[in-house]
Length: 446
Image 1 (cartoon, helix red, strand yellow):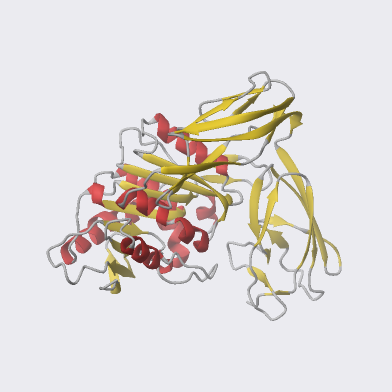
Image 2 (tube, one colour):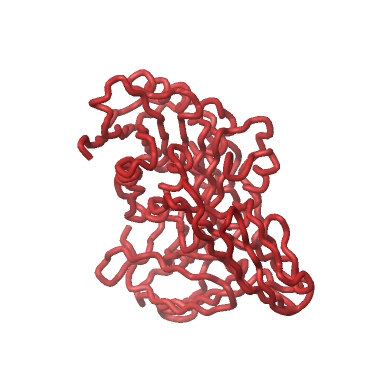
């Protein structure tokens, strides 16, 4: 590019009702300094310290400045301003919660989502609109976040669609689940009278107890509020993706194309997910992932999936397999001139749950003051340095995990390699009963 983008820092920006300060990072597009009369759409991002830099937790970054630079250089999106809003560390969950969430109270915090909302709308956005050349209307303003950042994006956006009318709800934390009973409660409310301009919702295949099915149920509820598929709402069930900055970075271009560019034309489709269903047992839903000539991708919630043999199974309008008899038949997908097919098998039974047995060899000097846990599941000590656990999880759940000593939310002691360096997260897909045999080489020091 002839001109270069730049990132500015606004030091110690004060939030009046939250009564705290944080630095704000502002990305200015390549033409900002030369086209002095031009005004720009704005993207506001939660967890902004990771928008351009690496996360302390996973070591990853959204690298959104690099993604946007490339999209602009390829003339795929309009030039935009990005306002990255860092979280406040231990207060993150508190600021991102509008309603009561159990783990917030477990940490001794209170929900401050309404105060954070006030900070964005009455403190930050007026300042940005005054100091920078912005297009101030809702249709030119986007709000995006992941995990609890996705939850707060939903709540703020649907409460204030005239302010933030393009909503990127990525890997949203929509459900609390009890590790022992698997009882689930949703963390979002319905805003039936408020309709944003465009809504992007996604979830990765390997996102643990933030289950794909809950996000899809959330999307189905939004569809019941008369959001039009593709025009007003896009959904993406992302194959192979987990709950890390690297994963969000890999797909952040998709909502940016949707909000600020041209997604192009559909060129191909692939049917992802389980290809076996039972006459009795878990529900199986087809995930048709459509690729576009712009690089855009989405899961088609508006395509046509039919069974070639309705005596074996039928399909619902939302892609759920409805078994009729044991056997095998093809699902045929078609939409706007693209087609594909896959064989599906119907068996007698496909249980909802599977069992994972975990065997861990830990350093012999592992203290006993904190139990070894895997995503809050406690393992039992069998003998010196050997631990074992058995957990029951929903079939097809994708897990990413490291072992910890104690609560993984509060002062965790996470496993490391023999050189006291961080290790990558393990990944496992629980499609059947399985046994995991793992070794912990060392623990992170306090």
